[in-house]
Image (tube, rainbow, N blue to C red; front, side, top):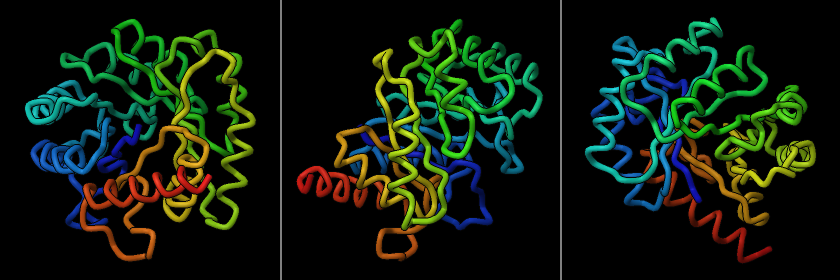
Length: 242
């Protein structure tokens, strides 16, 4: 599985190619799926371009995308979009249109409660386990660990020369005895080394403007579709060379 991460916390200041509005997100989702993405992850944006968990914004965004693609669509529940854990849970409970899945960063306060609220509503949970945090140990002790859809092993190491080692260490820390699949990915300079590692290990991965604005050769990416197409090449070549 190669998931496309359409925008992340980025916005207009990061370039014209970063989708913000529901229409732009739908357009880029269509292109990314045509390029080979089999799953979509996005950050719904308020009218001023900030990440939000607003039921109204989520509904409009999901409806725009689902009118044009049929692959699963997921969203963030990152604490930066709603810092208060109790308010984050209430946002989830107030959603009128539900995503197929939502990511929950296990090192953030309120992760267990947010994940439980999502599961209660029938929304799949992607357990975000970041390198450099206590997310792995907290997830290992969670009663929800066998109920999540998958684990997002997120390598936050900014150094491309050490990213693979950081990824291996993160994977070693994960409790995978419950049989949940793992999606491995990096960000910024670690994006491409970690994507290739995921290919060699046979793990799911993701690529998109949330994780990087650059192609492997350092050129600026023009779209999510371009990143997906190149990601599939890099991923497949890594698999064949392993």
